[in-house]
Image (cartoon, rainbow over all chains, first blue to last red):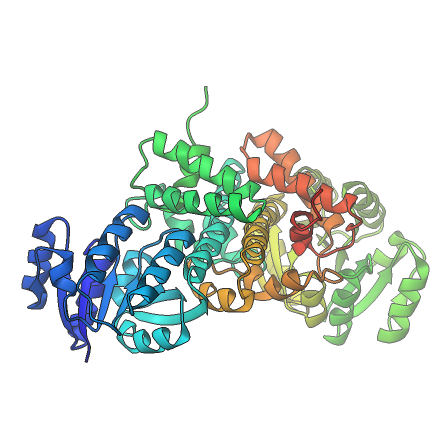
Length: 288
Length: 288
């Protein structure tokens, strides 16, 4: 069992750290809002610390799941100041590939391991302990982290060198953007055409139009329910990272850019916290 | 066993009629290019006719799978002139909902049944006898046609009244347009980012980005192979039907319209007969 620290107990980090504790690892936690850390520690009989540096001290492996590049850099700098040589920092934040490369280099200089390891599977996946991890970094560090991450991940893939985990997550979000907008237009059209949507989905969900989004979101999209799942605000953050990276590598992402602007429309409709599938809502706004 | 006629022995109709014959139905065929009909008849020991009217005469059920609304109207008018009262015309063409309604009304006036019954599953599905049928029309006619269509269809759904089959097929094509463009941008980005695409797909194809297109097309898209499958020309025909219908019902299909214009780009690149997944090719054109 590992001596672990987990920094950031949000909707993802909270349950992930919980699975680590349940699997028998010794888990120290830190969260910016102290109350969350106290609640977590009470529930999981874990130790809570008042700073990242003290939580990370003496750990074999330090996990982070925070908001953005800036938060991540702060957490890494604080943690790496007390981490022992040969220990490893695993970042589960969805962040830029650039910060992943920056921190991997800093870690190496300090004798630490680093993995950028964003996840997919959302809150439900975190709670069920069935997340997918896309990792970037050295194979030896990945091999070390894998058995510990197994507490909350069903699939773990080392994609390539530092930053590759973040880049793979970007590919994931690009694909989702296309699927969801296509599905939104399909359902919107079906309604306008007065079709029995359930029958249409039954007919088309076995063939070339099939997708996870169709199987898992058609019903709630059809009912206009979006009070769950992966929020539009977070998707816009992720697509922002995608579009910045595309600026650098020259990828031509017209659809992704367009769908990002559609998510901005949804935010303006009051849908900042709605599920990603709420793209259909902007199609169904009453017309003048 | 039914006395059947099959009009239109293209890449879809040919194998479909073949399955009918193999299932033991008595199949008369007609094809505009006579040679195809002769070849089919030789292979399946079937009867070939030199006109639609003579092929349809005395049949319990007449199937059509032709090019477009105009061809379909011609075939229906010829067939219905010799079909006996109480027999049924099943159209497998992907056509407009309007022509389906027009022909359903004509059929009723002549004491015939009519189903608009476009299929999905492509050439591979037709050859394997595993097509999906989306039908519009009266339940009693559907009940009659279903056991015969079972020769080549794995899934058959009656969506609703005349035209509903065509409208459901349109929903299918709208969803596919979004999925394929998203996947194309995702793979394009992955290449620009120097990722190991196989590993990325292994990581993301289990989650919320999963789709039939990802599972079945990522590899050929990644290799730039498009010499198979559902052709860009046909997809443009189908999206044309979608956009015309959307004009009528007021659906807002910005992505679909955009992807249709991307398919026009692919046509201009010489990709008229390429598979639908060739959207990635226009992203990878050499830059100036």
